[in-house]
Amino acid sequence: MTDMTAPLTQARPRALRQEPDLEARRRRAAFWFLAPMLAMLVCVAAWPLARSIYFSFTDTTLTSLYDGRWVGFDNYLSYRQLSSGRAVWRGTLADPAWWNAVWNTVRFAAISVSLETVLGLMVALVLNVRFPMRGLVRAAILIPWAIPTIVSAKMWGWMLNDQFGILNDMMLRAGLISEKIAWTANAETAMAAVILVDVWKTTPFMALLCLAGLQMVPRDIYEAAKVDGVHPVKVFFRVTLPLVRPALMVAVIFRMLDALRMFDLVYVLTPNSSATKTMSILSRENLIEFDKFAYGSAQSTLLFALIAVFVSLYIWLGKVDLGGRKPA
Amino acid sequence: MTALDMTKKAGFALAVATIVTVSVFPFYYAVITSFETGTALFEVNYLPQGFDFGNYLAVLGQQAFPRNVLNSVFIATATVGASLLLAVTAAYALSRVRFRGRGLLLMTILAVSMFPQIAVLSGLFEMVRFLGLFNTPWAMILSYTIFTLPFTVWVLTTFMRDLPVEIEEAAIVDGASPWVVITQVFLPLLWPALVTTGLLAFIGAWNEFLFALTFTASETTRTVPVAIALLSGASQFETPWGTIMAASVIVTVPLIVLVLIFQRKIVAGLTAGGVKG
Image (cartoon, rainbow over all chains, first blue to last red; front, side):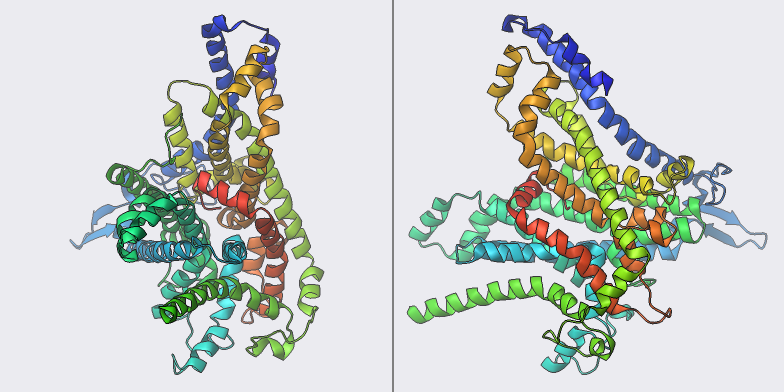
């Protein structure tokens, strides 16, 4: 902190013509203003990331963190010829449990984000219309967003309960199902349950971002379209959608990244179900619970690589300006 | 024409009603469940059956749960405080001073807030063990800055960029150093932004699960989400739904109240940050 006050002692009233000097002084101050934040980020993000990647190339275990030996790519993929002549592939990339987790994660991310985008856009279109008590409705949709993920997982776990759950009761009464379903325990319905809860929880986020985009569309465009007698559906696809696309793209990528690292909801709603186990869950399981520290690190590194590739592709293909606008 | 208008109006009203019901019902159901004990718990009731505070007394009477709430409050407050402190000066530098590599730096900071927590878990675990922080609140405070700090820096930078240049110029002409500009000129103008950013970061820290689950080992050091996730009944096979719902309501009501009070600011903050809280 003493460094931050340094520019204070140098402060002297100066005329504006000495600007180059002033600019240099500001730049020096900027460095000291940034330094603590950057040091903190190196400490909590860059260093742990580098160590995690390093661990993935060793045989480190949870109990002896400093005794790991370098094993190269063995945790990822290794090939060995047994004395019997049979070839054996080992490592994460030859592990069916890993590919199952990859499939679960990708499937979950693709389906839930698509549903959230469509539903979010629909909710935003409804909220974009002026009607009495609109403020109250907007407050109501913030509730799912405000509820902690763990709490919503438990709430829905209770509602989806096979014996006493209200959803089974509703569907039985409505005649949609003929017997009670164990939504979270069945392998066939577990993923649907996870997606349902995720969509419920994050659609408000999508809706609010879409709404912010919609409200920037000038109203007179709609007036003009109305005067010209253009069909509302056509107006939506030709006018509204292209205009909100930038806001929508940013929302989609943030949600996608969030979905790809999914951990908490699945951990609580469908514990130990291989039908929903995501990459994050599998990786932590190996890291902490199964004492395969290095193996779990390899999996977390692969997830990191996947997300990095996804981000680069998205930026490259979509030409998204993530900041919404360029720094001034 | 009028008939068509009527159906349109009815359809719209139906859409609004559906949105509100779907949003509110699960929490409403959690609240009515939290007031049920014994056999009433295992009947499906759509309307409240009375107010039995048994579950609330049970959960607050536990040794651990009040401690867990205090842990969460302390951890989230400390994390947000530290992040805001570091972020305000950094955001000033990033928004008001021109230097080479600024755009790249901003992108890197944004990238940090987006990468998966699991990717740093083993490295952080080693660090937490090395510093002797395992099973203490400091482990969480340290690890939560990984997502609260980039977020606060990013949002405050966007807010600060919008402040008029003239105010700063006037201060500089009067001989104010950058430090004085931040603390005496910008800070008073930034209060609304600080409240919004702080609240969003607080919610993020309050809800975090992965690090809290990994870096705590005893009931009394857990944070609220971990405590709720691992709340168990008398036997392993019996889930204490009543107490879980009571605990959930206790930790969710303050959040909902805060969010509703600050709803306009939160929407502004979310749009500026483009980040899920």
